[in-house]
Length: 86
Image (cartoon, rainbow, N blue to C red; front, top):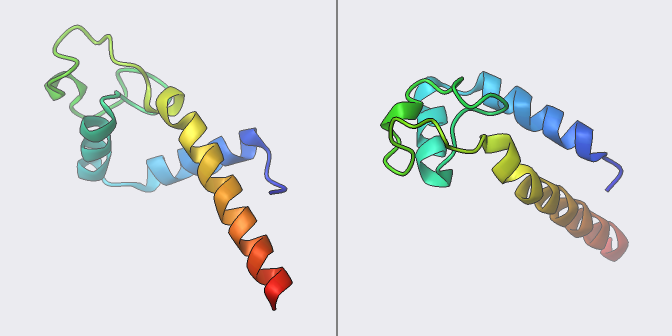
């Protein structure tokens, strides 16, 4: 709950950089995005069926920003709940 949105994105970017190319490609396919901050930084972005060769895919950071924020808030809320019940 005390983490800023910039810090959340920094954690996500570090996780992206630490991931294998295969995992990045799977995430790009699932979310239909390309790269984290830069659209062509993905290993095989042009192979994503929804994007084709046009490189018009959105970046994964842009698509996941809201989901990352929601996940951090949910985890913080659950932790806070259980700390009060203890």
